[in-house]
Image (cartoon, rainbow, N blue to C red):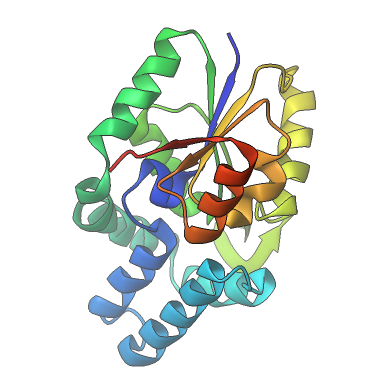
Length: 217
C-alpha cells in the first residue's frame, strides 16, 4: 500500500479542464466570447511555456465565479461536464486508477485547477482525495479571490506536505503521474516519478533521469 498521486489535466484527462471551462463559457456567451477566448488561450500558452502568472490567471478564471450565482454556476458546470469532460476521460487512465485501487493504494489527485471544476471530475473518476486550488467563498458566493496557496508548481509540494500531516500519510513508495514540467518540484519529491504523455521539457528530463514514461492516450 502506497500513495498514488495523479495530476489531472492532460494526464488522467485527454485535455485541460480549466481551458475547456473557458471554452464552454465563451461558446455559451456567458462571457465576452472573443476577449475571453483570446485571454484564455494566452494563459494556456503561458502555462505550457512554464511562464504562467498564477495570480493573474486565477483572477481571470475566478471572475465568472464571482459575477454569477451559485445555482447558475452549478447548472453550467453540469452541462460542461457532459459536453467537455466526459468525452476526454481516457479508458487507459481508468485502468490505471483501477490498478492502484486493487493494490490498496491511497488515491489522490493534485491539480492547479480549482475545486469548483475538479471536485465532480474527481468523483466521476472514483478518486476520493483531491488537492486543488481553492476559490474563496463567503455567504454562498465566490469572492473572486483564492483561499490559501494555489496548488501550482512549488505550491503543490506545500499543499501536499500539509495534506500528508493531516492524513497521517507519507511519501514512502509514493508514485506521481504528470504530463507537465510545471510539476517537476513534486515529481522530484516522490519515490517513483512517472511522465505521462509528457511535454517536451518533461520528456527530456525524464529521459535524462531514467524516469518511467507512460502513455494513456
